[in-house]
Image 1: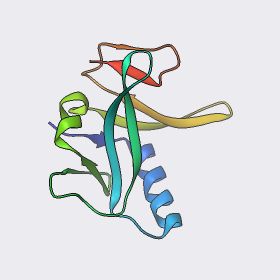
Image 2: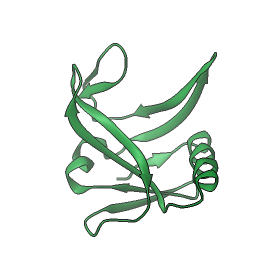
Image 3: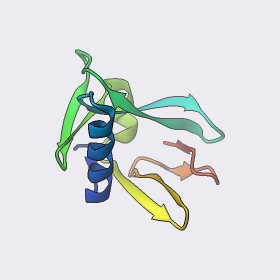
Length: 107
């Protein structure tokens, strides 16, 4: 499987990387946190780590560490605007439940 980005997410990340002026892509991971057990960690990656798995979607490189991949494999990352709010939405087939605020999930 893989981690993919929608066209909107790829466009947003590409623009942010260009404005930032550096970086090889986006790093996606998980950590133990939140009311449901796991939280997504999303940050710019300036370089790949030797163990990272690399996925390419919409012209963007997404790096995932092996420990996080079991929780995010098959995830599609979208960028949505709802009224005045905007942000990333994780369409994760591994998530068995989410907290009410959407900040954490259980697998």
